[in-house]
Image (cartoon, rainbow, N blue to C red; front, side, top):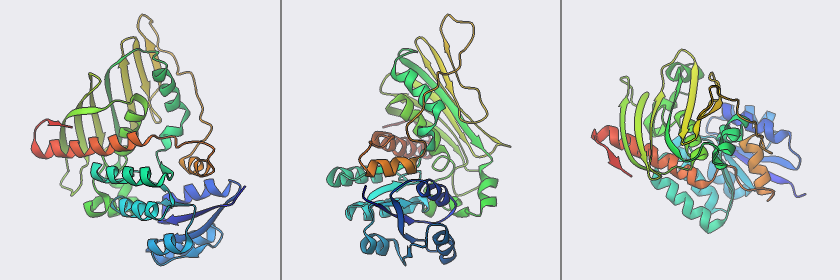
Length: 328
């Protein structure tokens, strides 16, 4: 098997998780890295087998010409770096959110169609047994047609960001948005990954808590499939909690990775049941990326999910700003 040559753009904390996955895979070599912080780059290079440290993302892409690049930069930098990679025929793995608005998603879609390259996003939940178990029940129509969806994601986001030192998340020029765009992206992506629903009307309210980016968001969505839903993304919580509930004509599924019991409860039965567990043949997006490059599989997350995440986020911000229901 040909050695897969990988470059890293951004060498902060998230990059180490992906690096550790790649170090345990055969025929993978880190050949080049770039981070504007030289200390970050040098520290990462020591762990990555001392690849070449480049002075810019463009230099890494154009001089090294890797098989794939892993992008771990601040959110608003994703799109220009994705574009740079795809225009140079380099496969892309990008941390969430892939892009910060729907327009960017459409430009990426065109480039992917033109180049035929691999595009993987760091949505870890899409590889988790509990979410895949819920997806299998939904795909098999075990609860019938979906009629209502609801859920929330909440964490001590403000203090977590402050303690991490990654306060660029509070700067809209780098983050593209607040808790909704950041951790909330995981929740919104799993909504679309599991259900396949398509938003058509949105009503939203945002509390910025005197910050430049959103902290708490409440939104109601009407979907084209004649489904309605209500959701909350919160940046204030003493811990971390999340849950997504999906009601169908034959029952309800509750699914959560943290702090909540997951189950399916069928109509006519007194008690709920544990979800029949389903496992993925890959466990992380980094592993997925390499196997896709090797042509062993297709990306776990369809690009349609990435589009819908960007589209709904745009409409949530638009609805809150206008104070009205907005059509998609």
